[in-house]
Image (cartoon, rainbow, N blue to C red; front, side):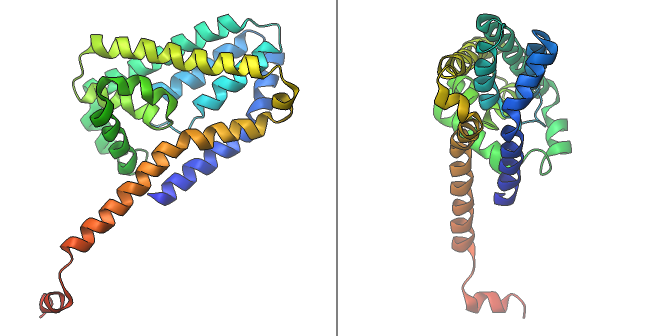
Length: 236
């Protein structure tokens, strides 16, 4: 589990390190169409359970920074990316509602780690339907929450309300933060470092939950482990 988490973290960091330059190139080359490319990434991260490694938080922040320094409109970016985020969660919910057993059977242990599923379940146990909003700011859980909501038979109307609120708050918060803070010279000069920090901080809840689950499993295994005298008798 910890090895899988480390691999995910390495993938995220390596992608983020060049993300600011990539976004700037997209905007310079494609203009407003660059928002469509960013929207596809946001849609994939929220809509497909196999792409939880995509860095949604840092991507939105950097989009706000890059867009604010170009001729593109920040408000238009917020609208386009909010639509992508809401549609992505809606697709993920639908997949969970109609194909959860098949998806879990095919992807469990490879693309879907049990520790990530357990962490998402704990969010639902603690926050209920509000998890759909809260999970927007927690990588991996963000991708799995709508899928498990669909699999758990949450009413679609209730899910849709949380989905809309969460999508608007998540996208607007990070894009506008990028646009406002990106005007500062310190932020512009340290974009890569700041983006990496966003990834690391946003991954903390899942990392901590995974470590707690691992420790709990070890404690449980120690409790059920028979004493040495009984263990030796098992092989007689």
